[in-house]
Length: 177
Ligand code: NI
Image (cartoon, rainbow, N blue to C red; front, side, top):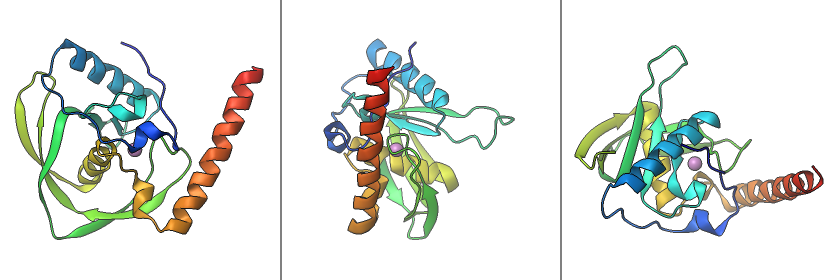
């Protein structure tokens, strides 16, 4: 198990459509374990493989509301939305690859998702509330899409500009450390 480095926007690897997982093998299971550990450490409620530079269709999530609540980890390979509600909902979204930035995003309020779990077994589950938003956000990642792509061009450019500046500052401070 290992905590992996999270890539920050802008990075070309965050814009790529990821490869289908042919088989959930030990490699994929190790990736899922590392991703969960990285997500909990960050901390965050979801993480997609491209965010750690692995261009495969794997996501992990845990939307348990508080630390008192039992953990509810999900590991998904090849997740796919098979149904979305007409009803929409708005959540203020953030992303571990775009730290310190938050914006309202409107998405279907409920979705059905088909995926393979860590043992390769197929599931289809109904998601609503925060889990519905989170799973759509993470599936977007494996299609090379970020939540800021839902915003207007002005707002997106402002956020990207701030991210570039922060990346530069971070590079400078690690170079001098
Ligand atoms: Ni994200």
